[in-house]
Length: 476
Image (tube, rainbow, N blue to C red; front, side, top):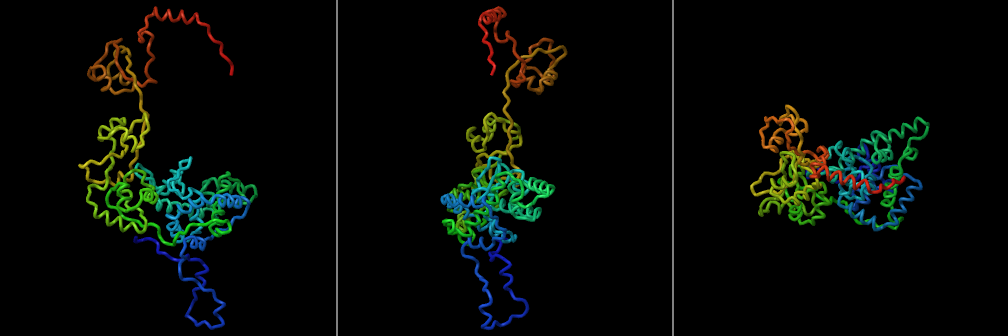
């Protein structure tokens, strides 16, 4: 695609030193052996290209050795991780080289998510680079009803490298930058200030950190060491060619995920692995105009997309709730089964859909327009607890009316009037029993008479209860 980085060899300082200055001069036979020959061919294997770009100082301690042994003793885990990474590594390395950043950082998703773009931590960090919701928003990763850019391959990589560059600029040290990526820049800054005040060192190894952060750089160093010399750890890395795995393809219409995969002749799981930000069964073109497809399938998709004549590309669209309502009402208005509406929109039980929420609903034959860019970028769905009400009667006080009763209980005058078959301006006589529907926790406690029990019966119950022995409470 236009604007993609051009494939180049790593612009290392060693290669630059081979370029002579001034006019060209002939080399005598005696000088041939005194000059090194710089290769003009890019590496054929991506692992070799990554090795050539290593630029961080090595960390050597017992924690690194421990993590090396941990990874080396789990060849199946390494195999799954590295095979999964083959879809994304080329793009990450390209971006790192374009920014002139150390290629060790291409291995960071091994530590963060094992290169699983659908990974979600217990703290709600998501994606290959494990962005928290607030940090993702800070780096312009949209999170709405249709997509979560923290999982997007291109967007999350851009944001992660932006963040790492920012941290390196703050601390001037890649190990400290990585610690801040894991622990937070504020935490690392405070730890440095504390050590400086105590006259202690301020390097990564000197700081007092949580156990997870203490192991963070050793884990990366261990993976780096295995990639640098897999034979030493009896590890075999899968072949990853030094060639783009995917291409960006422009889509001009909303399209179902399943249809897009079928038009590209790609397995649905492979399509989702390249387009993990689409967490709904439809891709909204106004919000996600580019999809990623395996290199050889991009042309197949474009040809099949243009030749498609079997109706609409998308069988889903967006519907915005005009008012707060329960799922049953929303399902009735959109012509859906309530269970289907709940399932596709992840609506929890005993929840109301708040006004302004955007729901995914079936696209009817009458709906031809795609979802607008405004909805695609701002769509959210929010809920409020369903309020359980109970029919209750209250006594009207002197001078009370529909309006004053409604005000007393926080109700609308129209509702009180409807429940009592009167107009909204009607007064009530003192002592009149007014019907209202109140939340259970706010409903006045009913008297014994309201349960149909006579005073005589109540006395009988009290007498029978008095005869029963009372159990003594036990101290616990």
